[in-house]
Image (cartoon, rainbow, N blue to C red):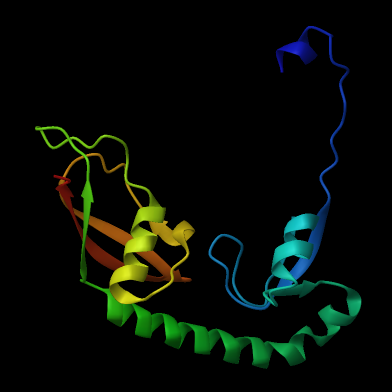
Length: 166
């Protein structure tokens, strides 16, 4: 930024290429199933559309949206049922992680969502997106609560016990 302010770099306008899409399922940070949202081209073309999480919001798809809403709602209800089952499995469970800490119980480094993700796979055989693990800044040993955003507004709470690695 300083180089541009000093006139060394020319000012250039960076165009953001956004694409209108229709969500086929509820995505935590984007919106609910059936909504038309605007996202970056690359995100839509490389992630959402190939994984059948969205379709392009062109005239044909927008006209067909009403007829597709039954299928979208049915799909959404199935995902909500699966999320409730997962919540029942995880809610109130306890996981233990050993980390290096000093004598006062302060951790050398922070706990990452990836560590909890790996522990969920090892202990419960549940593969969970690390981006949906909501952590506060945990930097001490002891007992902590962890929130997992499973789907839409369905949230599970786990107990985390951090012990000092020997």
